[in-house]
Image: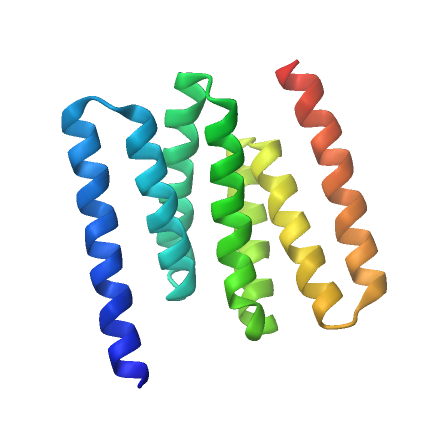
Length: 152
């Protein structure tokens, strides 16, 4: 039942953290970032959004140092995907997404904030709140445009 699922998730989380540590020792930043992305998804699933976001921030910093475009995509999938996984509980998913947006805004991470807004939009879409979904999507788009101007 639920207890076993919880235990299984904890075990997965443990091994993802272990992976990240091994990669760090091996000096593989990309490997570490990939392992951290797994941690992020698992923590969002467990409702530990605040922890997940601080780790997401760490992973993004690693990828930025690496100038790793594919890694960034993977990172964004992890964060958005993690929020997707809580879609069954729209309230929790919305809280996770809006917390993420605030977190990234405070860091001046427009890209992260944009993806959080997209996640918010997808939750609104699932809940049948079209108006709110459109608002979140257009906010995400303008953030993406500003982010690409900043990066490019």
